[in-house]
Image (cartoon, rainbow, N blue to C red; front, side, top):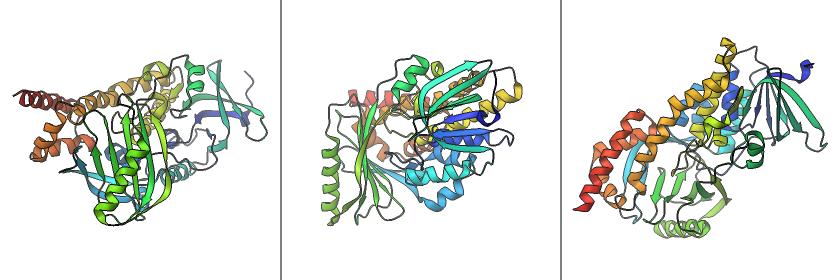
Length: 402
């Protein structure tokens, strides 16, 4: 293969979201690595998000060396208030939470990436074409405005194109892509509400979802709602507007949208991750459904998959005889997947229609349970500790049956 030096990179990262930039920052630890990061957008990426950074996000941002900038830009809080569907009472979970608009987070990540002199950024469109030849990969891109096809060659590829690119993913791996698990709808609202900590209000027993109200640094709120797609068909706009009307009435005020609400689908549960990555082509973030089910927490696990991908590539490069996908899939299976498996058990405390009302009444009176759930949220609990959740659920079911 005749490789032109200007078109050869040690690694190409497709997608400049949290997962892609986390991979780029991690790969920057090898100062000799020549990197190309490509995105269809020319500016930091914004998206529909709750903007709340909790345990896994904070841990990953610290590892990436940008936590100080995040704290300066973000709004820091010490706990989260959870309300049952009847909204009559609530309990608080101790957990560090930082709210920061996704566009701001993207800017911080991108600035960190570009401190690496060996990293280039290009605004290009990826068409799903990757060809392998002599242990290298050729990747085709379309240049906007000129429609010129550009081909680059590399040793490693990281794909972080989100959950909305089914055609590209199907073309690459010929795997039927997982249907969305949930839908979210949120906007930025300015009002004089006396809400100083993040608030989540869970829905009725027939719907698996919640409304959130997250205070932001500049005096407005990220207000949204989300449902699992298995829930009965729901008008998210109506649900959100009704709740905002209730809050305005409760606090005797009126408000206005800083930014109109937008919607987005979510995929969760780390489905097909072991079938996606191959050779030295790694899929990260929402391309492998890295979002947590039910809560829709996504940025932390996106960052973590990016970090794991970057570390796997560096280790593969060092060893020279093992593919990065083998290392990457192993670390996802051992280090990340257990949290998803255990999380599905823990979430039953809030979504099981038989025990959820009783769970709230018990948790409100039990500080030990509140501490336990706080540890789940902040990921201070080890995966095997989540087995306690099943014991709690079994106990609540017995009480319900009395």
